[in-house]
Length: 340
Image 1 (cartoon, helix red, strand yellow):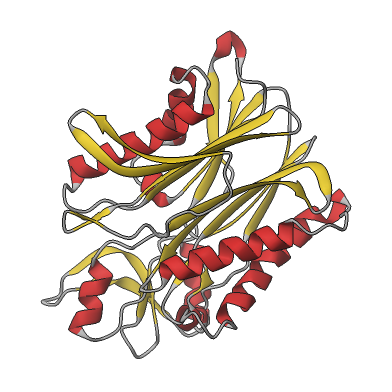
Image 2 (tube, one colour):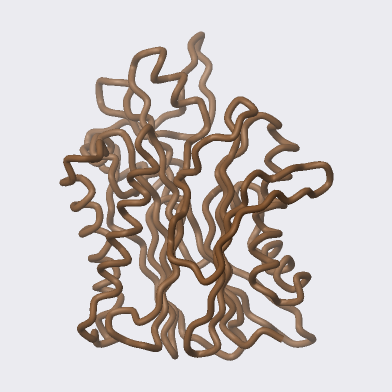
């Protein structure tokens, strides 16, 4: 999200970011209202499906609130099979748009990723991680080169996982994250994050920005008082004020060290790895990884129930902490084994 020097831009900046309404192809797609502990979650959209290799998935997304009113949902997600020509490879993604044109950015990036990952020619798995990383820069360049979308002060995060028969490949920019769970003895489950944090609060990220001529500090509201997280600014201008340090789009921020180069990790799959969850920061701002794993277990290991509950409970926690401001919330729950 970008913040310029004007009062109007600052007001836009302080408001919670918008996110994009998901429009992906779905086996099941519907909207509903969910009531939990007197909290109404507006318009949860859901998608569920199954792929080769006993993989099942469910996605749920909900728009947030701004000033107590439902706002445009700038989150989006995707779930596809036959990745890079391999019928037993699947890919899942969560994208969280920000800025005035955040919805357009996240939807453009989603479509571009799906086209790249769905290419027909087969790819050798030994170079899969390289091609996944390159996809982020290709999507960024395509978005910035699109004359119909103003991505100067708007952009999107992206968190993507590719599942093969033996490995998990994760790549991300921004603060949308992914976790995997591992089942241990006595059916106890551990959960851990497999993507990295890309915000201006992270010292190594801040160092890169400063070396590129940018500034990193919190939002000043006058009288010597600063609020919120660390943000990225131009050297001599209070813009764009981006809290994340890697993204797709955000051309102004990219001029001072923000980058579309993702963090990429490879994980060997085992029979103990039973769950992957990708989510926007609308979830992770109020949920720990182990809590998400518990939701899955308490949902009878059903991905659709778990995805819905994660979104609804996140919404509830947002309203407890800030009744009139709720971030857009998206969760993609992927089971790596047959649902019991």
